[in-house]
Structure formats: C-alpha cells, structure tokens
Amino acid sequence: MEDKRKDVRPLSPERVDIDTIREQSKIFSENEILISFANSLSQMVVVLNPERQIIFANQLFLDFLQKKNLHSVLGKRPGEATECIYSDLVEGGCGHSPFCRTCGAVNSILESQIGKRSIQECNILNKENEALDLQITSTPYLHNGYEFTIFALNDISHEKRRQNLERLFFHDVLNSAGGILDLSNVLQEVGSHNEMTEVAEIIKRAANSMVYEIGSQRQLLAAERGDLSINISENESLAVLNDLTGTYAKQDIAGKKNIVIDPSTENCIVKTDPVLLKRVLGNMLKNALEASMPGSVVTLSCKKKQDKIRFAVHNQNFIPSDIQLQIFKRSFSTKGTGRGLGTYSMKLLGEKYLGGKVSFTSTHENGTTFSFEI
Picture 1 (cartoon, rainbow, N blue to C red):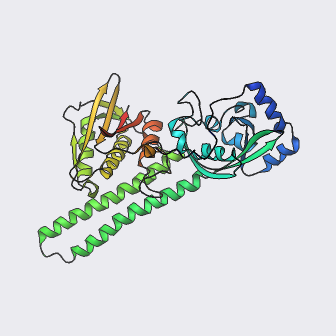
Picture 2 (picture 1 turned 30 degrees about the vertical axis):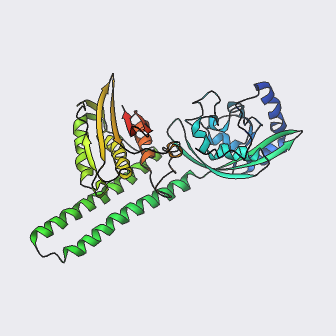
Picture 3 (picture 1 turned 180 degrees about the vertical axis):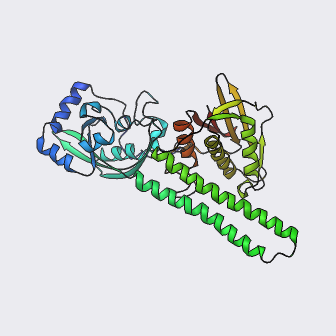
C-alpha cells in the first residue's frame, strides 16, 4: 500500500516523561488569559508537544471525554484520550498501528509538524463501540524553540450521522418504492392469472424489502441513542441460518449467486436476541452477496467453540488492504458517500448490545470471512 506520509516527518514512538510533560504544560496551564480564552471557545482545543502528547486541553474537550481535570489526559496522545480501539494495539500506541495510516487526526498532526495548517476529518470507533466523526484542524505553534501543535476538534458526528442515514434511507427506500411502482404499472397490463400472481409475488417481496430497510434505520438510530431494548430467548443456530438463506435467496441482491450452509455446521442453542442476531448476520450476508460475482458461492456456517458459538459468512473475494483498515468505520463505504453502514452496525449491535465479538479475515487465497462469536 502506498504510504501517504512520504511528504511528512517520520512518525516516532518516542515520548517524554511526565516531569517534562508537566513543565511543558505550565506554559499554557498557568496562563490565566489563555485559559479563559480557550474555555470561551465553542470548539475543543488541545495542545500537543512534538511527541504528540497532550500538554493542555480546554474544558470543552474534557467535558467531551467526561473527564474532571487536565491531569486525566496529560501525556496521552489524542487516540488514547478518546479511547480509540486501535490506540493500544502496538507498543508505540496511538499513531503506530496499521489502521492509523488512514487516520485523519494523525495525518493532520504530521502535516502541522512540517509547518502546514491542516484540516482533515477523522473517524474514530472507541472501546465502547461509539463512533466519533471529528473535524480536525492542526496548526503549528513555535514557543521558545519548541514546536507545539494547536489541535482543534469539532464533533461533527450528528451531522455525519444525519447525512449518512438520510442518504442510505432515501437510496434504499426509493429503490424499493420505484420497483413497486414499476411493477404495479406492469400489473395493469398482464393478460393471465399466472402472470398476475407472479408480479404480485415480486411486489410483495419489494414491499417486504422496503419495510425491512425502514426497520433497519429505526433500529440503528435507536442503538446509537442507547434506546434499543433487547429480548433474549433460546434459538437454534441452524434455524437462524436457514431463515437468512430463505430471505436473501429471494432478493435481487442474490442474483445468480448461490447461498449455501456449510455441511459441517453444528446446530447449537444460543441465548440472544434473535432479531438483532439476524440483523448482524444479515448485514454480513448482504455485504458478501454485494461483493460476489454471478455464479459464485456465499457460505454460512456455525460452530461451537468451547463456551462460545461462532457464526461465519464467507465469500470468495479479497478485500484490498486499504479498505480493510477502515471497514468498521461508520462514515466509510466502498459504495459511495453515505452508503454502507452495514459493517458499522454489525459492530454496534453485535458487540455493544449482544456482547459478542465481530471480526473478519481476508486473503487472496481464502477470500473473506466475517464472523460473529457470542
């Protein structure tokens, strides 16, 4: 993958000790005029040292993180303060995992360190499976020979959420409604009872699809607000997979693709919310079908793994590495702006509400497998 950082300063994992952090912090935290000014802004403001560690933050940033004072974030890097899920994957911390290559915050900071004012957008999925969409402005600031970065953040999550959901909702619902309208016009022209029955069945499927999409959006909005209730019951895993296969095999998205259940699948009893489980697995299946060519096979499976049950959806395609790094971000899609909330909702529903683990693997040799372990 091409390194987008070739024009900026090399990324160093080095940090300064807490005593140095405190000394650097005094430059800003003991300036009452600066503190009053920073706290009067309607924008979150952070000051970073050359090692990208926080040495000052205004009250709005601390409130955003639900922190009581500056000491709780002092010395941390931005991803660590916001509890980004990738911030502690490697020893170097925030900025050093493979996922950080596509991070707008990291790249904005690096550009500021070569003297540029940089504005970028950053999508963070935190350890509570909450998606944050931030607009980052990084500005270089030189003081007594030290190169600091003024790191300003705007939370644009609500705006992004509204834009994405509106585009996704109207795209899918208009597609379904348009199909129903076209078919209803055809219905007026059919000459036999058999043809009328066939068209009526297609209209029914399109209407069901539209109702499903409306329900999906309502469910996702409720989940993001924290208002989604779950109803636990015992479910047979094979019945869940058979239900999904029957539902999606009849949809246009299946085309000439084959949906099969792995013969080695085990029929396990799983205690969970069946509606949310089918939503998670349904999104995996939908993505697999969209990625597959006509004539290819999408395979569903379920295996017991000690005290857990692992559902999986496999297709034969490979996901490019740059796409893999952003796959679970709410605002990212390979299908155009505002599309493809499916992978994000897998994480949100599967992990935050069902308490499972959503993951995927993708290689040229073995294709792509999304799995949900619960």
